[in-house]
Image (cartoon, rainbow, N blue to C red):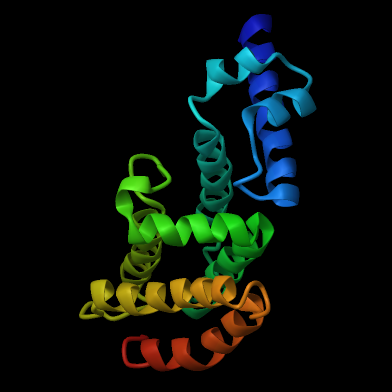
Length: 200
């Protein structure tokens, strides 16, 4: 890699880091390109070398976090499916709380109105989450943790509706509802019931 390419990567990362900091503090509506570049110490035009809109940088931040969850789960070879799903739920809700209620509302809005959806590698946020969860269950069948006849599509719909329900309740309660508390309850009670018939 040339020095110029290294500098370009550093500048891009600086924009991402400062956008994330502003996003957590001020939310999406207050986030603007000028504030990101000012905080990063670069010219405003530099932003547009790497991103088209502020929504693109937000989508990139979110993709990075959820990609890490996916990588972490793939490395958990010794954990059973219940444990993996518990880790997934916990990590998912950590992301919800970390990115804040304003970003969470944007995710829900994009699920309800797909034409405004954040782009997660050519998918909407909802489709990305659905596919990740479906892959976790499919891998559990391949690893002989779940029976061959496990209705993966149905279980994915049931579980994702719970996750998005918790996210929506958090937004509707204006942050009073504690999603991480309910994630644990869901994993301990409902998830056990949902999977019990299919566990090997």
